[in-house]
Amino acid sequence: MSIPAGERDYRLGGLERLHEAGLLLKDESFAGGVYLAGRAVEGMLRAIIWKSDVGIRTGQKSLETGHSLRDMLHWLRTWASWRRRSIEIICLRTFSG
Image (spheres, rainbow, N blue to C red):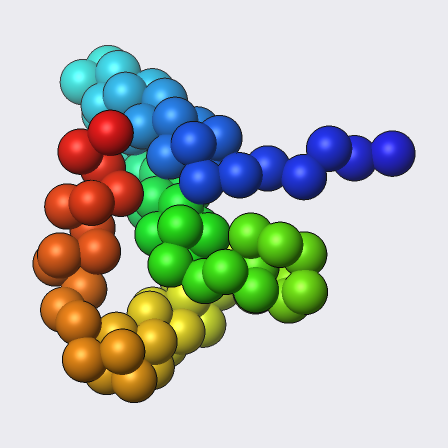
């Protein structure tokens, strides 16, 4: 049985992956660093989506985008234009605490 992740879990996981990616890149482990940087972006995008969509937060909708950053960015663009908000404001709200 899996425990559903929430916005905070995705955000913190993304920030942890970003830190780990930086350590690998500093050690010149480029493949691993780039891979973890991609996972960091995925976690941060999931945090934004989770915080922005009440249907996902309440379990009425699924956040099943796989690991496709393209699908997540498409979701964000669609949501932001539909709500007439900028993605930058959503990001600031998500990552400012």
